[in-house]
Length: 528
Image 1: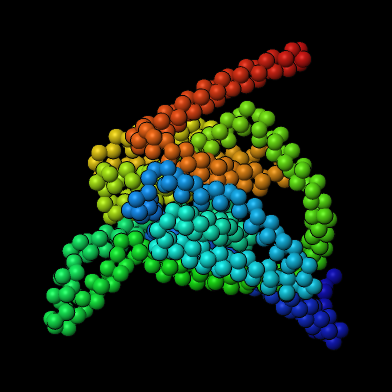
Image 2 (image 1 turned 60 degrees about the horizontal axis):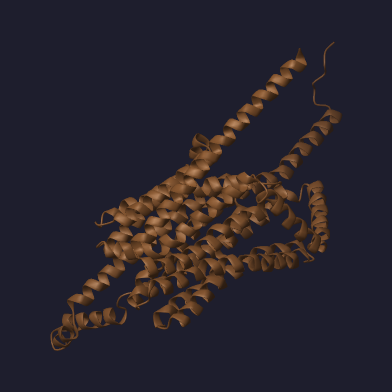
């Protein structure tokens, strides 16, 4: 039987119809494909802009924050006052982050109540960024007001105000990047640039401070007066030296903080544009999937219903935190470790740079050490997952406590400027592995519904309660017994906790092994 393949009018109409249908399918699928490509490009752009935003922001705050203890010492403050001052920022952060979270959630609820999708998307991408712009600017202005304040009480007020506005910046930036990042596993690589930016900013601040101090020491008022009647170059020298005297010392660092703040604002603005573009592309992709739209609508309805039961959910959340975090010995020991690590960080932030200065370190040494150690700390963040898988979470925590104790021992014995490089290297690498392992451990406590709350508790214990009490108690202790005794006690506390954790984990491991052996014997008897 042969098939007639001649082009009859009937076959021609069928072929033309099929061709037109194929063309329609290609035309219909091409916008989806182009939108998918655009979404992928937008995710890559958001990743790059997120890295730049974090880098420029940490450069701007690192240029002066690392040298504030030296600035306070130049004002004549004692150890107790330094401890009080350094406790304000972590304590303010701990108290205000939940409030900012509630305000941000309220803004999100208003955005979800918008009538049209376009308006809702515009507000969803605009409101968080507007809060970021305002907070970065106000935090910077409050911080640089320290340049014109002399009384400790006035400085404390400025520090509290700066802490209020600075506390939500990193969490909000985390949320914005995580919401629009294509592959969330790359978020650790984004945070790598926070460590790098902090090192670059500290190094830049040290170079500026050292340059100004050398220029100020080499040119007094009489030398400036002698240059007035010279040639044109002498006039330039006169005005340059006058500007150096006006922005002498730490005032130049506050000026650099103000100027460098413009860079993260520009990067975050570009990030906002990229996020808006990505949402538009996502809407094009989701417009062809009505089922997903109905599912999201039902999810929003469930969320709105859940928000009406606020008091009940808060009470149940508090009970869940108490049950999962503080009634288990292992979890309780874990949070004790987090608190001691935070308190040690508060002591280190308050008195380590003073010890560097006593050992003869220049601001150039301090900046270079911070820069070099930031590369090591960033690399540890980058490969922290591999380190945690290799050693285990509990072993990483014990090793971090041992290294923290050795760091305080080096600070106590520090009698040469080059000790600074080893001390900063230990701290940066330890923190990278420690914080990654702590975040992984905390995220595994309790059900997924409590994960965000447990992580907030982790951050509050370390950066809030731990660092603030460490600064206050450490400042009082230093005023009574001296810096060497303070570092010695911190070293012994970290060593003691590492020993307790090591013994407990060894005992628990053996107990679990014996329990597994008994269970296997029972199962074998049942089989027989």
